[in-house]
Every structure is written in structure tokens, then in C-alpha cells.
Amino acid sequence: MADKTQITFKPKQVTKRLLSVLGDRSRDVITSRFGLGQDSKRMTLEAIGKKYKITRERVRQIENYSIINIRKSKEYTKEKAAFDELREVISNLGSVVTEEGLLKHLAKDKATQNQLHFLLVVGEDFTKEKEDNEFKHRWTIDKELSKKIHSSLRNLYATLSDDEILLESDMVEKFLEHLKDVSEKYKNQEIAKRWLTLSKLIDQNQLGEWGKTQSPNINAKGMRDYAYLVIRRHGSPIHFREVAKLITELFHKKAHVATTHNELIKDPRFVLVGRGLYALSEWGYMSGVVKDVIKKIIEKNGPMTKDEIVKKVLKERYVKENTIMVNLQNPKYFKKQKDGKYMVTV
Image 1 (cartoon, rainbow, N blue to C red):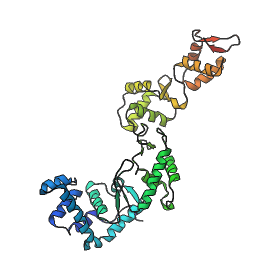
Image 2 (cartoon, rainbow, N blue to C red):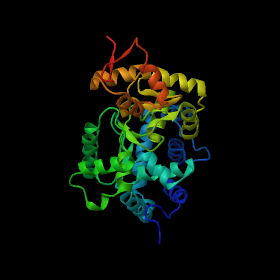
Image 3 (cartoon, rainbow, N blue to C red):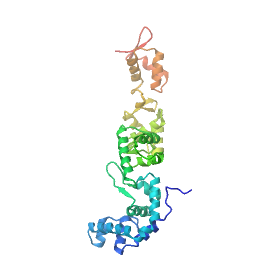
């Protein structure tokens, strides 16, 4: 069964036939502007203007007139099947799709992507919506649907907290809740995920987790951010050597063990809970050395027996019981009452 999200026609051949209706200079301008020749690099209006000793505005006029002339030509009518097929592909991809995502989906090489981009510009069924502060360059065959998607993405963004991280399936589910008056045929994981990529304000990190683009959890900038994502993904206390190893493996960033350890020490997001073992402070672990943990536990719960203290400290720290006892027996910090319970020395 044919894949309805792929084209069967040859873009280069269609482009060649469409360009044949133009005069030499117009054809050269279009070829240069869209990167349709031997060199797939697209030339600027200014560069083409210098070549022909004409203004940038004149080049723009030639480009616009050429596209109009192609659309009016018999060759354009003859290529209806190709444009219909391209329209069907876009429809099956969700009817609204980022320019980069669409071109990469349809072709791997830059030259073919340029041919397809030219066909999108020439085709009267396709509308390009230009990049702005919220959304990327995108193509649509349904302007009303596009408006609904934009509105839903804005509403989704408004519900996200600044440092929230969501699994892809959770983000898609949350997004689908905001999609109003959209055909059920579009409400699936693949299309919803593709629509999420339209937004410049929502993005995913290298582990495939989603959140606000400006969040360090999504746009990680340094070792501390990478370490946070690694420990969070691990889900339990982990040794700093393993953190460094996983940063290198998952993010392809060279993480030196000593550097990683220093970053963990400096950042309040991390708590040392054992010899070299770090947890996230958001998991509820108390900060400080064992003495500080004991003090906080007694201050919170009142005088406690040795066994009660040991039990609670072991939930906070990966240490030996003897380490806890050594700290408890320091009269500078703790005092044993007549009933056998310990209190903090005033």
C-alpha cells in the first residue's frame, strides 16, 4: 500500500517543465532565487541585482511576474496531478506543517527540497505563513484550521509552568484537550506532535521531554542543566561519576567527573545524600550534612528516640547507622533526656 504522506512524482522534472515557459533572464532569476541549478545555494535579491545591474526591487518584480506567468501557463495546468498529490500529502500530515519539517519529510537532499519549496510557492493551493515571535515558517491548505491550531497552542502555552517537563504522550494529551472544533481525523498522536512543532515557545529537549522553550530543562545550557535532566530521568540518588558518564552518553557533551561534581555542589537543585550520591532537592530531601538533617528532624517532630531518628535520617541520607550515632552523641549539638529521647542542644 502506498504511503500517502510521500510523493510519487519527480520534483526536478516538474520544476524543469514549469521553468520552460519563462524567458532566459526570468528563468535564471527564479533558478538563482530558489537554488534550482547546479548550486543549491539560494541567492539574495541583492546578489542577483548586482549580476544583472538592476535594483533589488526590480529582481523582486521579475520573481513575482515569473510566478504569475507560470500559473497562467498551459504547463502549469498539465502539472495539476503533481500539485494535487502534494496537497494530499500535506492534508495527510495535518494540513498545517512547518516548512522545515515538510521539506525534510519529503526529501533528504537540499536540491530536491529546493524544488519542492518552489512548487509550494507556485502552487495556488498552498499558503505560506511567515515566521513570527510565536510560530515557525509553515505551510497550510486550510487557513481556518491554521487559526484554530494557533489558538490552541497559545492556550496550551498559558497552562504550562516555567520549568514544567512533560513526557511526549502527556504533552500531546494536554494539547488535544485544547483543540476545539477540529475534525476527529486530525486528533491523533502523530499529527498533534507535528502541530506542537509549529510553536517557537514550546519545544522538546534531547531526551524527548516537552516544556517551555526558554526553560533550562528544555534548552539546557550547561553541565548543571544536563545533570538535572540526568538525575531526574534516573529517578533515584545517583553517584556523581555516573552523572558525568550519562551526560556524555545522552547529550554527547564531554563531562569531566571533577567538573560535574563541582557543579552539583554549587547548585541548590541537588542534595548530597550519601558518599558521592546526589538526589534532587525537589524530591523532598533535606539539605545539609547529617548533623543538620538530625537537627531539622528533631525540630520538626520534637524529642525522639534513637531508633526513630535513625529511621527518619535513613530516608534522607544513604549513610551507615554508626554515622548517625556519632553525630547524635556530640553534646555540642544534641542532648539525651532522662526518658532516652534526644533533643537539640540549645
